[in-house]
Image (cartoon, rainbow over all chains, first blue to last red; front, side, top):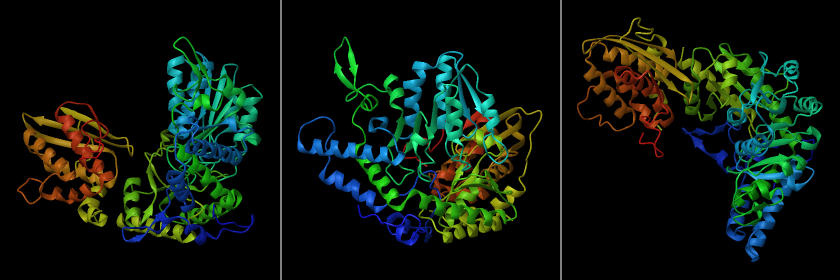
Length: 415
Length: 161
């Protein structure tokens, strides 16, 4: 690892960090790329790219299988990556860290492994208006299958969960809570620790969708005391196709497997199969080994910078951008929570988000436009879609200026 | 990629701002709803056939400038045409938007040629063709159509678009 090292409290040397990201040197439409779609997927530093190359050129074989050198090396590196992820979220044990293909698979794993075993007809599952479709649809599928019922926590006009309403949804039938840590559409940071404590006092387990949280703030699953925590590698400067499900061992032990196949068994006969111990019980088949090791390198990289310093820089970008957009007539920020991550969803009067996205692209500025896989949020704010700028630690104030200039250009085209 | 400023030219911006034939015909002999789930856009097309002739046509809905202008110009283009001519123009428009129409050959595209640029903007093709899909559905008495349906040129993996 030749990641930069900094003092824990110093501001980021963003130019030095940007030098680690080859893709940020690209030109789009003959203009420097201004990549503000980090909530969809972040970019990968050279350190992670190099790690993938090193694995693929010198360490690759299938894991947990053969006794030969390469298989032992790959197995070792894969398990080292698991420890790195364990450390990254401060899980108690490495066996509580399951490699999945991403947040979506992690949530589906809990739905199948926990939900289908323990949630019955008439039981209630609490979700929130801020959920991404990936933390809505699996539970709807379960509800349809079992006859369980979904209850939804509403939000206020700022895009914050109404906690009193959350608390009033609980009753003796409440069996599960799914809540997003940070809203991908609005950037709202939810008070998940408080929500988990409330649920636990009533004996209800909580799954936290942390896809947007892990890239932006220090996550400690023991401090949160969540039962499950799901996130993706590719929003964390890692590869696509890899993600993590953290689960408390006591739950994982009792859950049924999600997928059947090789590596998740201890013994197989046609009469009876004995499942492997956790985490392997949930990792059937050959996993994305390179991607897991790459994700390990990605968290090394982020930790070498420091999550606190990343959060501070991103917050400065958010404040700077929000202040400028708030000063622009005809532009409205959707989602104005007091506690917010570096995501700005916005609308320009009289201009459809799709047109905004295309015209900003013309200026080299990449934003996401659409419903952000969070249609209930869009419905709540009575908009079909928004434009969303989401900042990472490698973004600069000058890039915020480019966004603002781009918005001016859009307004000029549509006057 | 095509110069977008070429796509957002005056005529498109004008039809976006002042859409022609905007509204709903009631009663209407034919009607269909079109959805683009990608962006949540929604267009409804209603028309009255007098025999085989499109006597009146109107559209309404929430959509981006490209979609709205395409719908507006479509209503202007097909009003007074026969059903067969409207269907033929629809096929020509879809071919143009997906880069399959040889613009050097004689065609009936006329002013609709301002949309030719979307062929180089795969994510925007759907915006331009949604009204035409919806018109086709209305003429064939299909009440709902989506750009995610099999008819979607973007549906095939390498996007014939």
